[in-house]
Image 1 (tube, one colour):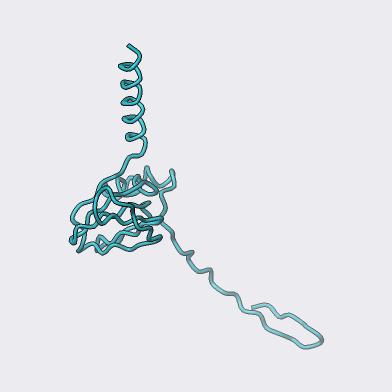
Image 2 (tube, rainbow, N blue to C red):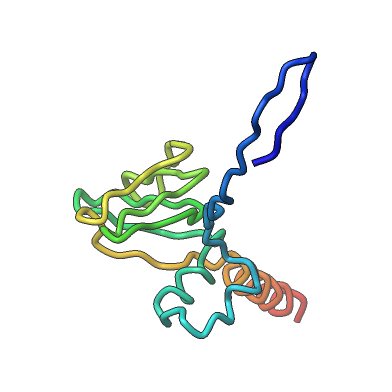
Length: 131
């Protein structure tokens, strides 16, 4: 301990031991190649930020961006939309936590695949119309 003099008074200072920083797990590229990470965790990290389509036990379909999950398979979606019946307008919900016990199925809703498929279908329709 060092002594410090402040305004004519002697004050003792104490040295504080450094505290281990809080660890945050992200999908940062430097963590994607971590040899200690399980294949399932690697797959979940690749899905972060992608659009998930979740069917729950009462038949509703929730579509939103995958933010996180936990050990109980609860899933958090952002910018989530709820579809009661296919073909109807969705109800916008915002941020949603879906309990794992209510998830029937989930899938990655690949927007690029839909855009590619619709673009090729449009091209086929245009080609058949011009011939």
